[in-house]
Amino acid sequence: METIFTDEYFMKKALQEAEMAFEKDEIPVGAVIVVDHTIIARTHNLTELLHDVTAHAEMQAITSAANFLGGKYLKGCTLYVTLEPCQMCAGALYWSQISKIVFGAADTKRGYKTLGTQIHPKTEVVSGILEKECAELMTSFFQKKR
Image (cartoon, rainbow, N blue to C red; front, side, top):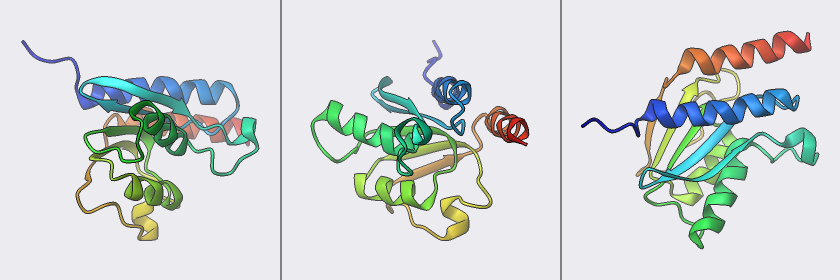
C-alpha cells in the first residue's frame, strides 16, 4: 500500500496555511514542520498582525517545532514551505540543523539561493513541489494589492 504522506501531501497542508495568510492580508506564505509523518508545527506569515518583520512563516514554524520537541535542533524534521526561504529564514534554518527543506515556488528576487545564503550542509533541499499552485497564490495576492 502506498503511503499518503508524500511531499505533495504536506505541501498541500502548507498551502492551506498560505491561504489563511492571504485571507488575513498577509503575504501568503505557509509552512508546516513534520517529524515521523506527523505535523508538529503549522503556521503562516504574521508580519502584519504582529508588527514584526521577523514573523515569517518559517520563523514561526521553527519556534513552534522547537517548543514541541523541547530543544533547539530540528534534526529528523522536514519543513514544507510554499515559497523559497529568504536569507533570514535560511540562516535560522541553518542554525536549527533541520534535516530537510521542501519548498514550492522559487523567489528569484529575495530567495536564499539568489542572495547566496547557505543552508546547513547536511540539510537536504527539494524545490518545485506544487510550484504552480504556490506561485499562483503569491501572484494573485500582489495583483490584488495593485
